[in-house]
Length: 340
Image (cartoon, rainbow, N blue to C red; front, side, top):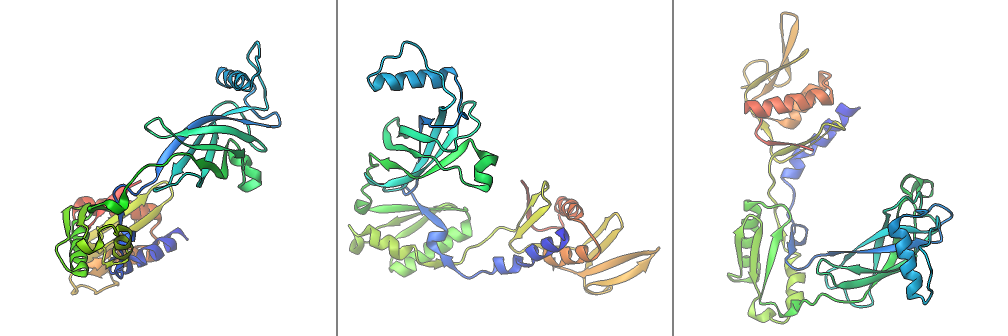
């Protein structure tokens, strides 16, 4: 079954490498237009005996909370119905005051579950130390078996309200910078060419494999949003690196790009395959010798053809991984190999 899955995955390699042009918005991001992580420390209350049950941080936090409410406890308070948590969220680009965002709540103490709890008002700060949102509300465990597998992490949909904005005068920009999600010189050059052709002038300049600077044309000044809405729908044919990504833990192999195998003879255990010019045996042919069958593949065969042949001979995912690594080291495989 695993061999069949690998073959099916690699069958798509030619399709990926010759894919139709894609939208520019799927290839690049605009500098300054991104999410910003925010974080805060808070308390989840109302737990059914599944909280921290003490601890310096939780006890001191409870005492300070009561003091702010006008109470004056004489000693620190310990309760199993309370849990200390870290609250995280992502502040969207151009987030405005009053906008709601989702938050994630994670226990940092000995709590066994946050189910049924309520997060008290928690300020969420950015990397500059300023408060950008306030979070609170009932937490949701969700998931399989009411979250019993990961009961110490919860979410609050729309659980925070934006209280401060990050000022960006986007519509006043004289130029914008596009950053490729996957840096590539060929793709960057194609994007530059497409932008200049579509906008009718020398407005775009590719600085490197990951960066294209775009000057705002005079007729789009103070209309940068309109320009971006047009530009991001331009279509560019993305180039791809010939690469094989291998996850040895799961036996998963994903290949992309035009990966070819040069003349080579492969012997791995009981498997024998030879890639050569079309004379000896032809593609998929076999020749007997000393009781072994040598399967021949035509020169410049693709990785997909090789995998189909190996699978037909009963190769396991572990065999494929070992063979690919050896082929790359031998120089017969025209592509990169990345282990994850």
